[in-house]
Image (cartoon, rainbow, N blue to C red; front, side, top):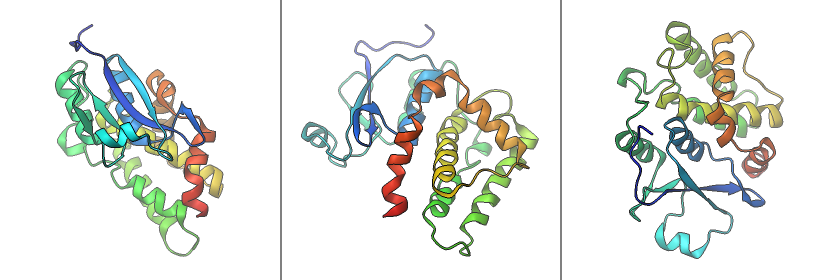
Length: 220
């Protein structure tokens, strides 16, 4: 293997599914970390954290109680998917996944736009159009640079964006009967090639648990 191995296995603490503490949960930021490890062929151990009933040992070592958290084998816990993925890139440089600086913000507002529209109960508040505008911006970028954000090869930007688009697809389809406009063919292709990758299939949550995860936020 091209990447150096630690003396101790990497441990990744991620969200357990809502109502199923032994099943991988629906956190897109956790999936981003798992995707990065999978794409770099770095072996790891998964530890599922029930965020509804956070175990005391977890809170003692991670007082903020947030996931994902990673232990690279030295016992030091590192939170925050941005920090974690940057460290993975540094420690395991092959294959390289860094996105060129000029493309790192592509699609960066999509998730917040999606969440606002998902929670919206006012059809006239502009949240749907704001989401469509963000999707159109992604479409325009992919038209010039695709099929991935940085061209032919997948990069860190895609590993962040893919899980968020999967949440968008599942949650908006279930709760609003809404889907990405058909004319955004580049986005549809992007979603398909992202979701069809072995790494994505291996690290995604089941749709039923994604819906369960969003339910309180939508109906609460």
